[in-house]
Length: 613
Image 1 (cartoon, helix red, strand yellow):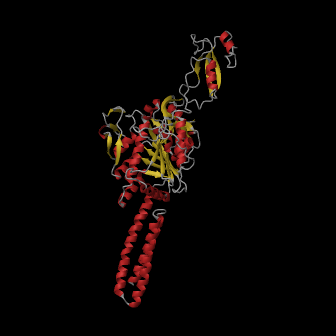
Image 2 (cartoon, one colour):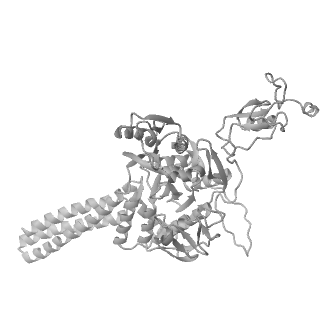
Image 3 (cartoon, helix red, strand yellow):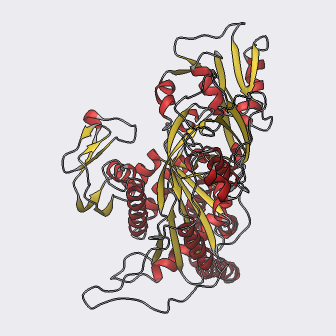
């Protein structure tokens, strides 16, 4: 009887253990096979020896064998439980469904009644601004209100601020959408969410069946848990065959076309409220497919660093003492993870040291104390990523791994499947095996995008915003480097280098120092130029021109301006030129024949005639 109980218990427990081990696809396959073969041999041996003992009536030996087999049952149970727990934790990282929320926003102290006008986005495919807005109208019985349709959010929030509408439907990340827009900063702080409506939708950034034995790309997105915009946008590539990686920090204020905003230009961090939008936008910008994304919030980053016991970083000395009006002295200072100053201010002394979670986050966010601002912040974020990778290789105990998974499960989401996440084990082991004592982390090719300042006028918001443009040659070199790492292009060999004994050769980060190529052009002021000059400028950029003559007595008429001088223009100064198709200019006309003014000088007329006139 004991023999049968032990045999059946062992077989059932081994079956569950086998199923659990098979879940760990591509993780130490040889070891898993050897373990299973060993335990199956043990089971078969017990089956044979048990029969022999029964027939030979060696009951004491059979009892000893049976006790040993029964003791293995809880071992299998614990092993299965642990493996299943890890598998479930990994499965929790994958987000197949996402929650999208629309908010009905009003100015502080305002209410909505039947006479209130409410703004809504006209685009029927806009989930937060239109689809969910209709659901909220029905849920809160707002169908009697006048609904005003808008083409974009900027015009809608400007009208809300000016009192042209009393309420408006915005996505839950509306604070991030309008950040750094001068006239809206105070308005945003004066807004209140009156109603909200949420629904789950399929994740628009679903993963794929790509294996991690092939070169792949990962977009790392760090978001503020309170304001869900992309404070960190980092594109990584890794080639398992060459064990080479690239790391590119995308400036959060880069001014690009956002695919989910009808390809309108906006800061790239605004796309991170929806991962599908961020991926599509960056793919459009770089022409490189993004296979996976990993999204982590501030709190998750702090907890991750704490779980690793901190990270060792050589903290760069700041250039300035002030940070958002706070005197930091010779140290770095920054808000904590909950955006608090005062007694919660995080202080960091420059130099190599061990940073805790809050300090690491503060170092990753600080930009106002550095002369190169966003470039410094991107540099520090790359430092921290490398430091985290270095610390992760020191994980030894099972409890450490479980702690990390618990933290990630609460604060991270990704489009990787559980099996793809498990495949990262092999990627990590390949990196660790190739680490050298004098180089504690694997070699990563870093990339630096050369940028320039843009102060763009937003006509619909009736205000300016500070942003960054990029030099096309710099971006092109970065794109080429990533394609090489992914095996999509051949590397161009460097045939000549300059170096000296006193100055050893150091490779230049891809993209750095290249400040040529196409740039985003802002609309200049054409006032004071001749109509001919204004027309020539516009036609060179494919912009159609209409001339309006300004006659004596008109509001724009300037008696001191020469005949044919531009005194007004329809496109506001500092608007993006690339999106313009038509330009109207107002030109001084002193002809006595007002109804039939003389034609403006054509660019085809000979120079001799111009000089005679």
